[in-house]
Image (cartoon, rainbow, N blue to C red; front, side, top):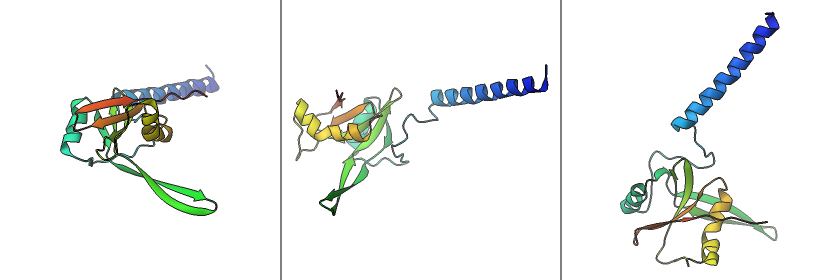
Length: 150
């Protein structure tokens, strides 16, 4: 065996070791499948009941309420706005955006009603498995997924 053959073998072993390390870490859950979701040590949600409802359904919290700043330019004038995601959860190595039902702003459970209120979250986070619409008062969790045909 020549010296350059040894280098090739060492290079192959190094690449295999790195690949194996990444694969094991992903299986252990140490490397997240999501990158654009903020992580919080303390989860801030509307109520303890909301927190428990999500956890009882088998979801793990990644982050609580998140403010998403939006800058809009209208005819050269800059306008500021914001959008709020009520949280991010994961289950079975998939993650979801959470939106809580609001008494003062109910959503029609129709295609157009869901599109008007929840599609924006799927567009902001395309790597999410969907949006969880959580009605704490009704103790229900609905999974909403959008498929866009172009």
